[in-house]
Image 1 (spheres, one colour):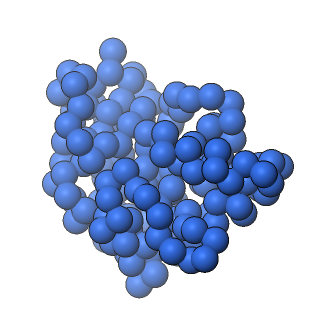
Image 2 (cartoon, rainbow, N blue to C red):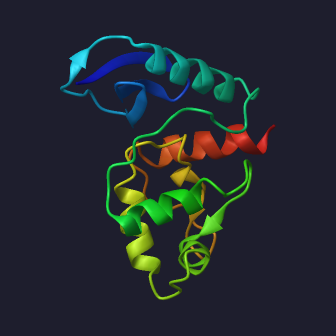
Length: 150
């Protein structure tokens, strides 16, 4: 059974969802699963709080990724982008061995259900421009600024 709990954060309200001992989603919008604060949800919030306080650069939370094999390959590549760095969609496509898949990488980013922990905010356009983000470009800017100022 999936459960969620919501928290106020420096980037607005976040809804953290888990299934059993696994994190399944972080959302900027209310979820419809049962509201219940579980140990993995509490741990996720703790680690997110440390990240927002610039005391954490990586996350150590068990994840349950729900997507296609291609999407999962993109999300694993995103988790390898170092804290404070960015990568272009083309770079991610090349990393996963499919250099012509920039657009598909963008779509996989769009389907990422675990933003911040899977840092899709670190992916930018090849010209350095900020591109779409589930929580909006203002939140993407805030996340990148948190990492730049550390």
